[in-house]
Image 1 (cartoon, rainbow, N blue to C red):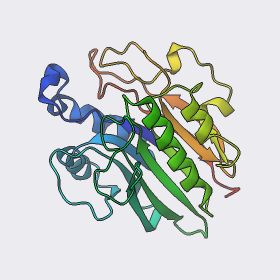
Image 2 (cartoon, rainbow, N blue to C red; image 1 turned 90 degrees about the vertical axis):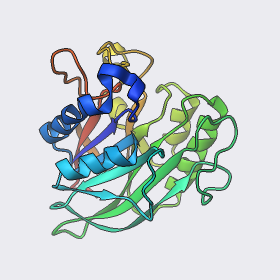
Image 3 (cartoon, rainbow, N blue to C red; image 1 turned 180 degrees about the horizontal axis):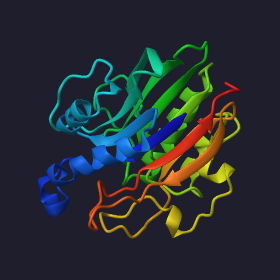
Length: 257
C-alpha cells in the first residue's frame, strides 16, 4: 500500500510562472506516475481539489460536510476507489474549540485542521484510519499545542493510524517528539529505515528544486504497519516543479494489520 503526502501550494496569482494554472497538470502527472493508494494533500483550495477530482477519476475525495469555499485551504484525503471502502470520518480544528469552524488559538497565524477517515481494505476484513493535517507555519507554541491535540486523538483510536502532512517543523523538534511518543504508537517512516537527515531529505524547496529548511513533510505510522520503502519525489519538467514542496511517499506491507 502506497501512501503519499503532497503540499500542493495554494492557488495564488502572485506566484507568477509558478501559479497553479501553470503547474496543475504536473501535479496530476506526479500523482498518476507514483499512483498512491492513499493521498493526503495540504493547502488545496476548492478549485484545486475540484481539478484533482476531475483529472484523477480513480480517486475518491473525502470531504466530510464541507461546503464549497473559494478561499479555505484544507488538508484533504483521496483514496483509490478500487482499494477501499470509506466507513466514516470527519474534520476537526486544531484549537481549544475543535468543533468551531475556522477556530484558532495560541500564536497560530491561520486556522489549522485534521481530516481523517476509517478505511476498509477491499476484499479483506482489515481496516485502518488515514489522517492528514497541516500545522501552523508561524506559531511555535501553536504547532506544539496542535501536535498535542493530534497525539491525544491518535491515542484514543482503536484502529491503526497513518498520519501524514506538512508539520512545518523538523524531525528534531518538540512537535516530532510529541507525535512519536510511545503513547501514540506512531513511528516516523523515514527514520525507521535509517535514512539520512541530509538536505536531500528536506521537502521544502520554494519552487527552486534546491532543498531547504527541513524535512517537514512526514508520514507517521502505527507500529502494526511495516514500512518497506520511502521516497522524496523530486520530479520536474524543464526545471519547473508541481509545488514548492516535494511530495513524499511510503510503501507499506499491510499483512500485520
